[in-house]
Amino acid sequence: VDIIPVSDPNAGTMAQRIMQYQAALQLAQQSPDMYDLPLLHRQMLEILNIRDADKIVPLEGDMQPTDPVSENMNIINSEPVKAFIYQDHEAHITAHKAMIEDPKIMEIMSKSPNAQKAGAALAAHIQEHLAFQYRMEIEKQLGVELPPPDTALPEDIEFRISRLVAPAAEQLTGKNQQEAQAKQAQQQAQDPIVQMQQKELQIKEMQAQTKAQAEMAKIQLDMQKAASNSQLQRDRLEQDARLAQAKLAASIAENNSKEELEDRKIVSKEQLEGFKIGREIAKDLEGE
Image (cartoon, rainbow, N blue to C red):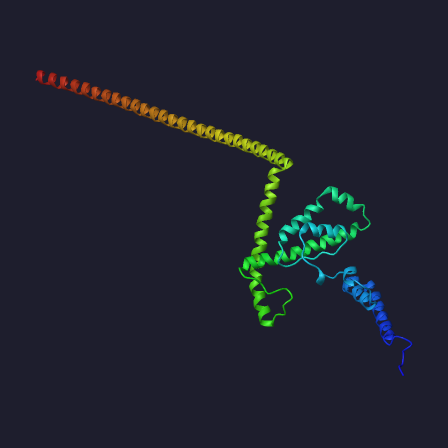
């Protein structure tokens, strides 16, 4: 005799699983950032034996790499996107940023009820490409490829890689800083407002330079005048000294002449007295 069950023996187990996933979904709603919501929903659909669960809730592991335009389309249509390590991340980032800067697309998307969600998805996807691009640039600085991101590394290998990539990261940062400064300088050079400010600054610098030159010329002129006055004073002092010397010499000469004249007078007087005495002596001799 065949025994026909009146109920599904797996019904209790399925009901328990549904209750468990419902509890997990309730917890996920309280802290959505801590849970992989697509995976929870996908597993819930599979427990319910919903067909095409992989198409209803696609997971990142099911996704295939696509070009940047297709990724932009998926973001606009609120479909998931994923970056892959071997893609041209710089090209993808450029294409995604171009869509963000497209006023026509942004105007239409801003009116969509999913605009905020699409914007967050696009920002997250760009960051995903940016992370891979950063990794590739570090590898370029090193000259070797790093182990795949999901590889479990032994402690000594992880330590050696860390010591190796640290200077490469610093070199990459310095390179990017130089490029950013050069780009900023180029943009400023092309900015008409900056050009006007630079011209005004040049005019002010020229005015300040002209003022400084005029002040220096005035200082030099004053120095020349002071030097001329000093020379004039020295010339006057020398002239006064020469004049004083001349007066002194004339005075000495005059005094010498007077003394010589007095001496002559004395000599003449003495000669006259001698002559008189001689005459008297002669007379006395004649009388004898």
